[in-house]
Length: 271
Image (cartoon, rainbow, N blue to C red):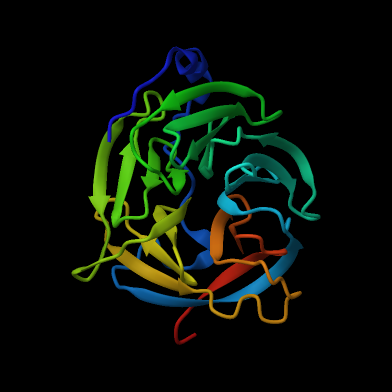
């Protein structure tokens, strides 16, 4: 997977500094996903329920300084949005050209990075105004995107996670994801939470918790039943979208065209 930078992105890369702190702090919400050496099963409890736009075919989700930033997909409907958490109101929106199918996003420094599925182009926006400030090219078909404060982490629906430089968008490494000896594929939307990569598994209600150093699956979150009791939404699709608030240790999840976004607390099996 080799990326080809265009001239436009070179002028924008100055804005992508990731800082010197090495990423986000460790230990989400008191659970033991970061340090446990054993595989753990998790259920959840719903802490809060927020409104979510029904027209959002969610492909990427991130929380930063009180706001949600969301990438939506489908040709002719793809966008990147700044969303007010408490109300679900869309505060800002940047629509993509019809040829683009939006995929994962992450925030690097003061910039938002968004991938697209088949057009071989990624985009860079300012976080404050969603102004387009650059683009870059690649020759793969990405699904999810997150970062650990030093490198970008990308899924493509396979059992592989790729690491990219946030400065050049070139591949710097990759891992194969395994649970015991079995491959875990269909890895979709990603979120980096306290040293682990949380990944929606496409077509399921599972979130896999992955050690990015080894590719070993250290846990599984079963979201089954999360929409029970919610307003019916005939067009609602599969779960997709994980965001994390590192300050208050909150985990948010949603799905494609869901009317709800949930703040959840992980509950280790047996508790």
